[in-house]
Image 1 (cartoon, rainbow, N blue to C red):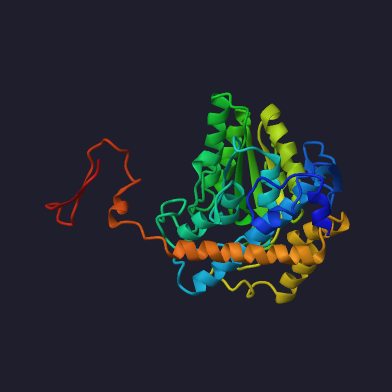
Image 2: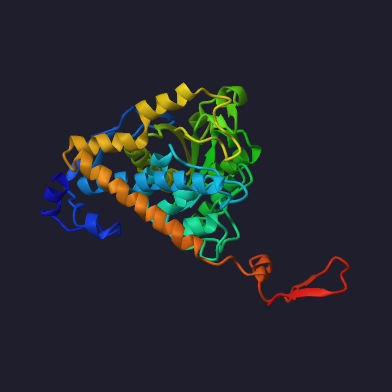
Length: 389
């Protein structure tokens, strides 16, 4: 078996998967050079090389992690329809290459901040399935203690700062994080992600202006999935070349369905941001689900369009073809891996369902700074309902 041949040359991967498959997956780091699917298109900068260095381990890890992300989002769809997830829920299936490629190019010292389509970014930053499903179902074990829900994932120890519900508002916050990184001489950068729908926000341009003035290590990443809610980009933007929107700030257009193109672009952008200041990356990507769970996703685009992207540009299929062409695994082995992933997701959901809901007193925590002696009154302001420490 192809995976077995690899395992005889090296140890298992360090990230846990399952006892059965950890014996098969390789940590072979022999370089493999992969050509990006499309050339980069640059604005005010020289584009990076299309030749990306990878390894057997990275290819297999990309496939496994992206397949895990896809299965997690499909499961979230089912949980929402079963009314186990409430409120807003925005799914990331189709866009997995952006999350996995970006993560492969940076370290946990580098910060990421995004909008409300945040589940897979959190998973890429080292979050667990148990934390994901617990948060989605409002349980104590969630990454935000069950109080944030789908739109407000957070993992400070891995420099993941959310998960934000206000369209475009995360970009100024991201530039503020970049300011702190430069002020503290951390030699790290911040990736501030936003969609094409948020690209027309005035606050984005204000934040970009000050970042350029101060040469902040800020990388603005436009995840252009071509539909802002239900509005096609051409109906909302006179100039849909988002990588050029910075005018005086360099930009790069990237095939956001190619994990290795994303990796190469993010590596290039990090070096640029540390040396010269901000840069814009436009990730040309696509979401399979609607904007949110209330959007069927088929009223403003055809089903043929969606199936066409799946057949021609699907990010997981691209990685699968590379794995097979380099003889790293057989079709059967990859199908078996997907079965294991399905079980891993099902187990995480079952565990999350058994988790308790937050205590009612949690309504009053994480609101005010501790030590101010804050009191909460009833509607008549006569009865003290709670005293916060």
